[in-house]
Length: 198
Image (cartoon, rainbow, N blue to C red; front, side, top):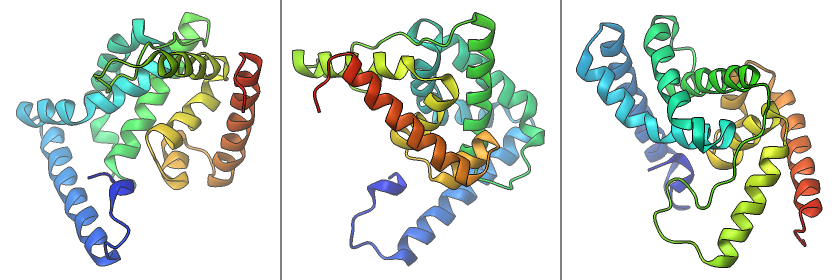
């Protein structure tokens, strides 16, 4: 259960115990990966590939998302020894993923992502209205500067806290807030330019 999925009446003690257990489990897995355990490497990939792929689709486009996702995990395995545990593993993983996406976009020479017909994790066929709205949103997102898009996606799609985004992107928390506000403002402007009516 994701942090944002907790019921309103769940106590902070229960949440804390759950998150602590998840962190211990993640710590054990990372330690096994650092030791070169191939089964742990596979498990790490299986547990996190969906979230990385979803982010890559929106950062680099669906055509390149699988390749960049693979590159992210190659980098994770190469650099896992550098993960010191100062933040959650997922935060560090997002940092590697965003860096790979930005590097890919620089190499490609353009920062435009392709639109999606439907959400990567949504298997149901979209209605015509949903499809049009999603296409409009994806086109507006593609118009954002890649760094602003990364902040917006990490916050609004992945649900990361400002602190985690700051750690993932190696910027100050205040910078996250100001860039997120700018991304939201520009996204709204782009949506209106594309015909969306608030």
